[in-house]
Structures are given as structure tokens and as C-alpha cells.
Image (cartoon, rainbow, N blue to C red; front, side, top):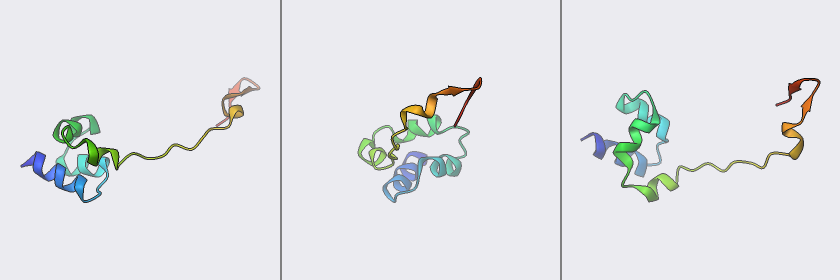
Length: 66
């Protein structure tokens, strides 16, 4: 039943952290065990990461600016 619930939530566009919370898991890694066969659904949860400017990691005055 847990696998079915997790898979159904994922198919309905629910995010992985919300599914983890629903199933009572402390980490999303635990939840991944229930979703391992739904690769297509998981791929839909991927978030784009914006490009980071090259000076983002430049150390200035002994501190890294974020």
C-alpha cells in the first residue's frame, strides 16, 4: 500500500519531500525505495538549477560571499 500511495502521489505531481512527509520518512532517500520503478515520474520532479556566476566562489577578505 505504501508503494501504491507514493507512486500515485508522484503521478499527481506531488513533490518528493511532501511524499516523504506523508509516508512518515525522515529522509527522501527512504522514500526513493518506494519509487524506484517510476523513473519517468521522478524525472518530472527535477528542478532546473540556474547558472552560477564565476565570481560566486571568489574569496574576498577571508570570507566566501554567497
